[in-house]
Length: 231
Image 1 (cartoon, rainbow, N blue to C red):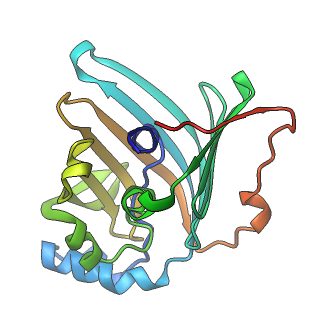
Image 2 (image 1 turned 120 degrees about the vertical axis):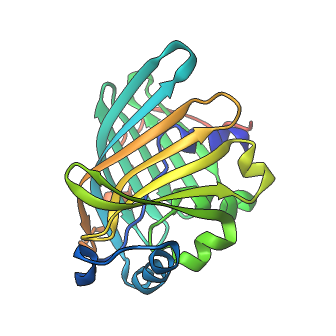
């Protein structure tokens, strides 16, 4: 389970996929109004495509490493991320099956989310149609105000996991939601104990586009090696 969570924290965590509101341009947001808006908007989410930049920051040595690519998500538990830089890596999720293909070593790691699915989905599906009431069930939610990201007006929330198991991995999460479209702008995941964090940045986000089933089928060579990590 720790290996699965570590994999998610290394590049598979995503932000809100929600719809827009005309009042976003003038409305002064509060925690209550943001959560209510998330409740209202969560019902319409079906799919999402975006460009993603994932930066891992190791604070003690001031080291940063970034990988960039594109992702596709559907509400029916289907997801794909193709990292292109600096090295190619493909992550594919279909229901309980989660595969990670690394062309450089010609290997596919196969994970079965199984009984841990509900816990894993808190991160894999965080914000993808997530209602405000659902957030409150899993996190202590704090409103941190409004902030501009890439010239976009966003609302910023701090999420502190209620689960001790989750807090053993992540102490808190910051999430920025673009209030012009209620689509993801940025997330920051703080690792417990170390002060290290992941910064996930989203651009060219498009909601509710048609994504063919073929997009979520493996396209790696037949002769790759397959392993099933157990820890």
